[in-house]
Length: 196
Image 1 (cartoon, one colour):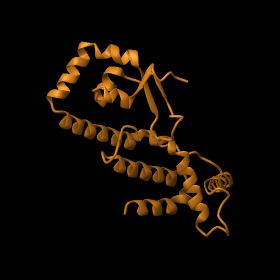
Image 2 (cartoon, one colour):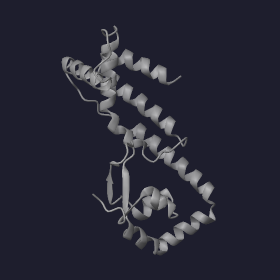
Image 3 (cartoon, one colour):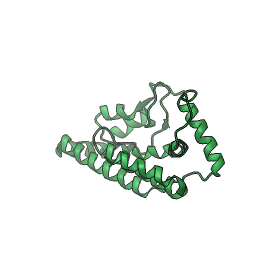
Image 4 (tube, one colour):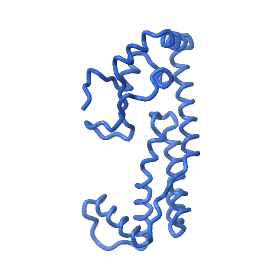
């Protein structure tokens, strides 16, 4: 476990007057990265050594970056940074190859049914509807592609997050349809529902 007095989160670094660009360029990669054990979140928790943050804050590079941020107007700079971040994330979502696991049909059916039982806490009553196996399989395969949601890290609120999420889901459904042509109608149905 990390000592909370030795590390500062990315939000804590921002409260000290840093912008996201300054964090990325001056601090680089976080010293500790992982999931927050106190709460569920899609974005990983990034921690920076407080001593390293304070050392960088005393450098001329930090002074120049913070003064240029202040001179250009923080709100305009934040908007430009957010737009740049949005464009970078959308480009990454478009370029990232999505690797769908290739399973034999029987194994995919078994895993999809098990996944559905786990997700519905024992399964619902009654038998499945005619299109249910395809829906379950697409749902299971999309869940296996959840790791690609880390591509959305850094997008908050309305700054393109919904657009990036829609693009990622569409690409996931297209990848599933390409890997499993029998599931293409269900993927097309889901894409049509989400594009409304």
